[in-house]
Image 1 (cartoon, rainbow, N blue to C red):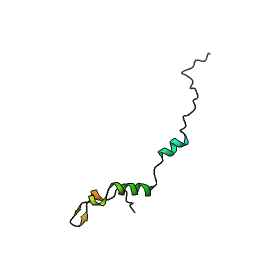
Image 2: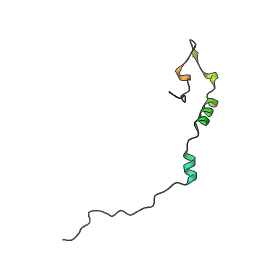
Image 3: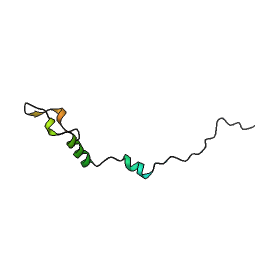
Length: 66
């Protein structure tokens, strides 16, 4: 009985590994830096206060829960 291949044999390829600089550029900034930038860009003068309460839209989305 002769062997008949049922498909193509895969050729091994070297993976494309990103450089260290590329990996470093994708890292997130520390949380303290993100909070600082957020607060600089969203001044508290823009907050809307209704009936002595801060509206949910004006609360910081980066505040920690628990």
